[in-house]
Image (cartoon, rainbow over all chains, first blue to last red):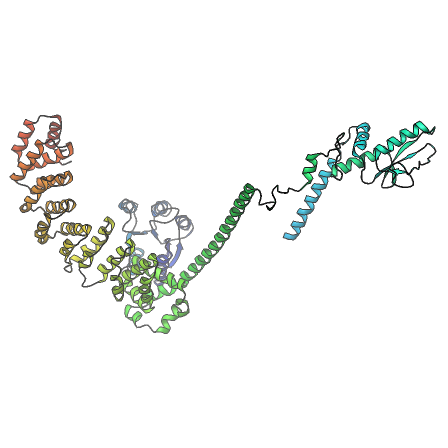
Length: 120
Length: 518
């Protein structure tokens, strides 16, 4: 079973994403802040990381940096608001994230993208 | 536990007090036996202390004539005892000695001295002042309780400063206690509310996720009450905090989700009959509750609440008014801007931005009768109308703007000229020329700027006339820039005829290919 790490501080969003991905048969690990995200990246065997940009303690860019150093083979999907700085989004892409999903988003669309990324 | 500690504390205090007393006894009250004898002479009678005379054979002198207290010849006054001893020495061959009695028991001189010293230390006797036999007023005063000088005043109330200090301290203590109690109650309630919110969150998220992902929109709309209330119990829905959390979560999801999820959330909102509570909030006396109700109506597309919302578009409260107008514009299928025309309150820039965002979206789908704003009695509404013509590019309304120009105030004229300039309508240059002739320098500057785009030769002549009157540097720069655009010959002639430093600087600036547009 593929394991996906979800780093999102909004309980409602993270719960919905978790519910949707579990429905598709994925195992999920849910964390609410950047520090817990770093620990999860170091300790878990992951197939995909879904992270928000604005999260407590460490932002999404720092998470991506860490993941690229420690687990470069794990693809990353960034969930973020459209209002966030273009610079951050561009930096995320330059770091080699697999996909970028702006909020508001459709969880079904996210599930399809996850499926596509994990298949490839 | 508290009682035990209190008892231990009181016992400790008792021990400390006793220790102080015992330690204090080490200090000698009388320097020597002479000073003690002197004290006894001055003091007179001392409680428990008596004197009697005995000879060497132990015989006790008996005489009831000299202040003798009993038949056995004892006296309480040391001076009397001394006098008696002296008289006996003169009349009798026997040697008489003074014997000291403490509570009828014979004691040595040193023991008696210690006894009297203790009485003094404990304050059991008052020291008699020598010679004059006047009491020691300080020691007397220290033992006396204060009584007010004037009759009819109380002991504590007589000193008004003391009363003020006591009252201030009491009030402070009471206030501090009140604050502590209030904070404790507030914190307890808040903690309880937070715990309940977390609990309700957990109760809500799971069924909400299930309904959103497991049911289609049709299934959700035809869901039986039984199934619906098994996910969201009717008993819980009666609790205001549960409803508040549920509404908050639905609104938050509505903002963060897209696609059919939004429709499902709106359908669920209605199925749970939350729309009634939202409309009911509009009748609240609290402005924040009313605004929350408006936001809910707006986000959840509750068109049945429009009638109530329209009543609030001219509310004296800025937040209510802004949100009500935005809600009416968003939800109404047929409303135009004529309701905005009658607003009595000025439109802030923030409101204008907010309304513009909605109007931009609506303008493409229906006629909003923006020209109705031009006839508003409210200047800010009229100016907003002119801005809308400019931003939305409504060239068909320019003729109406031209008609309004002459009767408008200067700020409106500025907006109208900006609109003509933005839309680039040269046929309206007479308005610009009229603006150039105004006494209002701000209007002149705007007209001069517009003249560069939509003016003609007549405008260039007017600009030349204004330049002859030596305007300030900022206006001169605008005027020369427009003149250069309109008529290069006139521009060069002006620069040649006016070789001032300002003109040369402006000329260098405008002819520089890098700086000319700055």
